[in-house]
Length: 136
Image 1 (cartoon, rainbow, N blue to C red):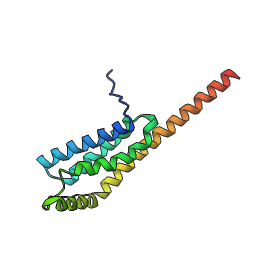
Image 2 (cartoon, rainbow, N blue to C red):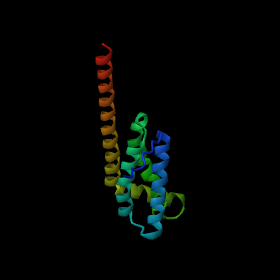
Image 3 (cartoon, helix red, strand yellow):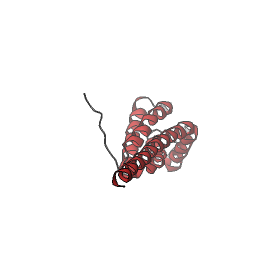
Image 4 (cartoon, helix red, strand yellow):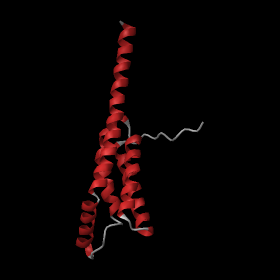
């Protein structure tokens, strides 16, 4: 039976992974389709993977890095109105129109991180109970 990869990324590593993945997806989408909706839909699994692959000690970083990565990935997709100001306005407009997807992805990352954190706490509590029952 084949196992899925189980990488454990640091907080910085998860941010870099998420930002790089979204930048690649945004660039590919810009070259092939130019669809903000497709980009936003692809953002959701990247959020889940980021939250699944981050180390247990860095779980709180997952819901923080995914919105930043969303904005980074929008850079190639943003409408270019000419110059830096126009590109910035295109980015802000894209963030505003895709806010629902942004919130959804952040919620997914937060929920996955929360479930992992609750399981970690339960595992540690069970280990303490076993240790105190065996050593008593």
